[in-house]
Length: 248
Picture: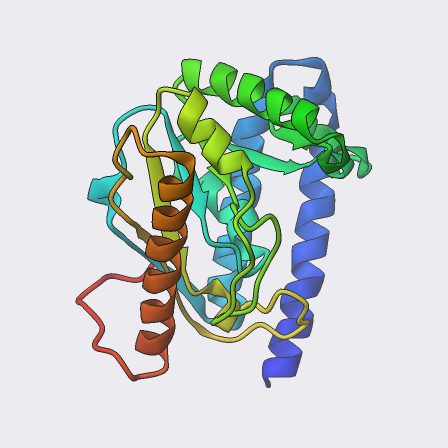
């Protein structure tokens, strides 16, 4: 049954993405905010499909840790789920992503038009300058920057070295950095066709203190995200108590 549900969901996911992208093409001639609104509709549709077809819901914890207005979201990255879910969870997210994604027909063009920040990792310092400039412009417009510090998806219970981009944002921009832990990889594997029913937990942690050195910031950020993500993993596996929460 799970294979059938996963097959149906993946087919509907691709169909929904194609239809929304195709219908959104005229928006490339308009304003970016129209495309961002479309992204919210697209993401909401995927979340709804996941709940109805797979039985996959989500729960958000720590919303009180989100500052009003602009901020930097430094998120754990375990699956494709969080690459669209922040369009549902945040007012106006701007993702930091690989510049190559802009070259994907239709969907990539819409990412560019929506104001996502594309980074060419091969350009080193120049890429970091582009990141800071783009993030600064987005924060000035009261948006939320979403960055995945590890730079790629990791399986639950594992981690990769955190990349310097998030530290550059912390040191150069006047904005709170909010760490985010999650357990999405338990249900939506990073390279898996199968999708599993359950509850993805996204936990916004308290913003990091201002004024830390780069070394202390990176150590604190990674420890908080990894510790909280491990706790969510243990909770899902039944080895840690679960707090009261409401799934959506």
